[in-house]
Length: 423
Image 1 (tube, rainbow, N blue to C red):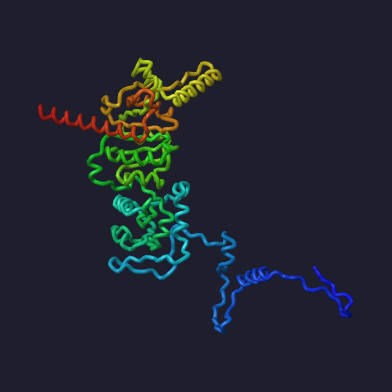
Image 2: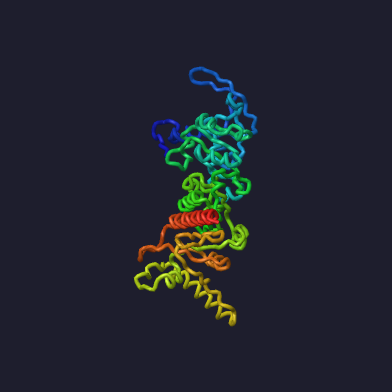
C-alpha cells in the first residue's frame, strides 16, 4: 500500500512498505545457522575465537532438519569419550553425555521381533535375570546401567570384552518395561539351548516329560507356562510356528528366569517337531472341548456344556473341507479328525516318555497336534470342569497337567523302589 503526496510542490514518490520485524529476524536466524564464523563479537565487546569447521561432519542445524543424515548407531557401540576405569577390576566403562543416542537407538531395534530373529540379539532387564543369564552361559554384548554398584554385583570374568555404558536412571526408566526399573539393561546374543549350562539342581530333577506349545499367542500365558514347566521339571519346551516370541520382554517378565532353567526350542514345524521327542514318546493333547470328549466321557445331556461351541464350529469346518475334497476327488480317502481315546487327566498316562500339547485359547489345539498324538499312540487328556464353563486358561491347564504328570512319575518311582526292596 502506498500513499501519494499531492499539491505540496514536492517530488512525489511512494512510501516504503511496512516490513514485519519478526520475518526479518527469522530469516536472519536461519542464515546465521548456516554460517560457521571464526570470530564472534558480543554486544558487550567480548570477542570469542572459534575454529573453522572442517566440513566433514554435517552441521547440527542441517542434521536436525534432515534426520536421514544422522549417523546410525551400531549395536556394537563405540566409545565417544575417554573411558572411566573401575579400579578394583580394571574394567572400563563410558559415561553417556547429554544427547547421547546409543541407548535409544539400541532399544528401538532390539525390541523388534524381526530384529531379534535376524540379528540374534535379545534384551534382558533386571539384576537377577541378567545374573541368571550369565550363569547359564548367555553371551553379553552391551550393558546400560545407572549405578556402578549394579555392575559390581555381576561376575567380573563374564564382563570382559563387553561394552559398559553408564547412563542416567531417567533414560533407563523411559525405555523400561518394568513397573519399578532396576537401573540395568543388557543386550545378549540369543541363547542356544544346546550350548546353555542349566542349574545342577534342575538337571537332577528332570523328568521324561515335555511340553509342546501349539499356537500360543499371549505373552503372559507363555511366560507362566514356561515357569510351570521349569517348576515341574520338564526336560524341554517346544514352541511351534505361530507362537509368540519366547524372548519378548513380556514373556521374560512373566517367566521369572525360567528361560535359563529349562531348554526352549522355538519356531518349529510340525514336520520336524518329532525329531525333538525322545524315542517311544507318546503325545497327549489337552482338550476339554472335543467331540469325542463329550461322547466318551459322559452321556448326560447336562454335560453337553463341556463342548465348546467355538471349537465345534472349527471341527465342522474341517469336516466341510474334507467333504469338498471328496467331491473334487472321487475315491480319495477321507481324512477326518483322528479318533483319539479320551481319559481323565488324573489317570495314569506317564508309562512312556510323555509330551503334552497345550493350545492357544483362541483356536485351541491344531489338527497337526491331533495327528501327531494319534501316530504316537497318545490320547486326549480331559480336566473335568463344571458344566457350562467354557474351558480353563491355557496356562492353568498346562500347570495342572504338568504337575499331575510329575505326581504320577513320583508315585511310580516309589512303587518301583518298594518292589525292589521286597525282592
